[in-house]
Length: 635
Picture (cartoon, helix red, strand yellow):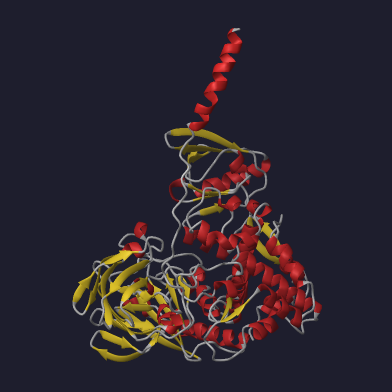
């Protein structure tokens, strides 16, 4: 009887329980009030005036006059999705003091509630133009962003100091820019001046698209070298002594230009400017543009060229982008304005083949020796083959890394993977070339693809989009093969091993020796770290701090991770030499004993390892010249 009463009570209480659900509202709809870009001329020419003389504080002063056709609502945009960045990379937080004026009267603005890079104003009747005034506050410390200003150098990117009207293709918006630099400074850019008054430079009218694609490198110490083919090498530096360049070093850069144009058989610029900043104060950069590139190199690039191998490749790499990435551009990366998101599906072509050609031309031009290039390829191959993340994550997915990862440090990079579309893409193209050369008895190679795909429409510096199918069809026309399957296996599917077959077909083999190559030593010196990645599975930086730990390596299995500090090896305070000695002794069975600190905790770690020191190199196993040998020869 008691149980029945309880059941009845629960039964009657059920409706009350159901009625007490949580609130379940419906969201407000998102209304996009910003007009879509149209491919029609903008009615008027924007006048932009930028003053970068405040180098002490890194503040750029901006005044921009924007013609208007009608009264009413108008949205002005800061660029957000920028070509070559591969992710949304504008800096709206650095824009300050923004004011708009019409006929001398200040008018209010609001930030668009959906598009945070957009500023909306209400243009009064009878107004023919509005004026925007603001400052761009460039980062003063690296933790605020990339350093763009030093006491002797300014790297100006126009997208940070200009607004453009929504509703138009950026190629349809005309603009005239004026730049004021510090007294006595000079400026390099793909733009060409029409007037100069003291330190005030006015450039010729271009489209807003071209303006964004034409950054400025200005400096107190300035040098310009003619590299031929209407190409210039502009160099700024922190010290005048850095501009003393041996003639043979400049000649190597000139030959690089010549070899690139010979490779592609056409060029896609009317003139081209390398904008090189020799500085360890300016934020690092290597960014492609159609008629120029922004590059930073370390002090000593000219004066100690031999010791700066890892500064060289950026020059041919970025130059190749004028063909691959700027002229021939993946169709899903071409956008009408800088608001539409870009899609990165073909970065293994855009960046991967550019990395390939940059490396090939580095060797062909003599910027680096063939052996130096081979030694660096060995490092690349070893790193990619020592990447456990490849077993679950295909190369194709890494094209999303700039967007989803933001180029920030990761706890287990070898397992998470990163932007391997650069280097692994390069190895795929090495293999493709070897297949063609082997199949045609060296009558054809990937150079034929380059001329057919990139070397068309000489002088055209517009954009000719392409798809994956276009790439496959062009390869098929050069050498019939299952190229669709070739790319599917290497790009779309996880793989156990790196694509090393290009080396095998060329008569080379990746091997490990106990002595590092000179290039490996230079790499460790540049990184200020010692790599034991191919033996114990980690690298060690300053003060014994462990850098990256390879997933599932010996170090990983002993619980080591990034940031741990090695205090001692055996009975001695840590040094790289003592650890190397312990690894060598480990070949006879002696455990490698380390004292490791994490936070306040200290523990002893023992590694049983008999493999000895391991450093990668490519060893020639075949007789005569193989495809890779021929590929690296000058044209």
